[in-house]
Amino acid sequence: MTDTEVRRPGLLTCCRAVAGLPLGVIQPRRPDKRFLASLSDRGIPDSDTTVEVIALPQRERLVPTPGIAEGVWRPGRTPNLINAFVVCHPEATFLVDPGVCVDVVDRAVAELPWTLRIAVTPRRDVTDIRQALTLAGIDAAGIDFALPTHLHWDHVAGLLDLPGLPV
Image (cartoon, rainbow, N blue to C red):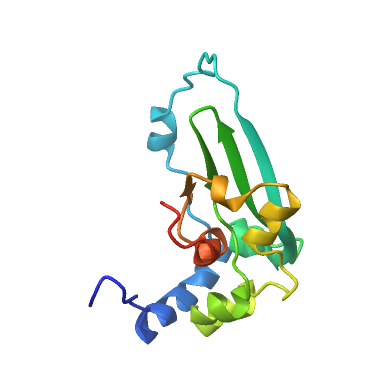
C-alpha cells in the first residue's frame, strides 16, 4: 500500500461493528473507576495571552441518539452541529476541525461503509469550509495550519478544499 492509498475496512470489520452496536446501546461500557480516580484537577492555568475563538457553523443535523450518547434511547434523534473553529492566537491563526468540503456527500461520505452513510449523511445544503470562512470574514490564506481533533469525516473533509494547509 502506498502513502496515497487509503485502506478501506473489509466486510468482516463492518459486520463486527454492526453486530456490536446493539450490545453497546443496550449495555453501555461501565465507567473505568480506576482511571477516573487517577485524574486530578490542575485548575485553570495563569495566562497573559488572549485568544479569540470563532465558531464556523456548517450544518445542524439529526443523528441517532444512541450513536452519540451510549445507552441513551430517548429522544430517538439528537441535534448535532457540524462545525469548525478558527483560533486567533498572537503567534498563529489556525483552524480546529476543518469540517466539510464542497460536495461532501459525494467526495467524503460516499467513501464510508453503507451502514454509516445511512446514519450520518448530511443534507446537501451543508456550508463548506471555504464558504464558512468567507461568511465569517476570514481569508483562508491567513490560516497557518489545521488542527483536527480526530479523523472522522465531518472533522477533516474540509481539508480537501484547503490543499497545502499544514496539518
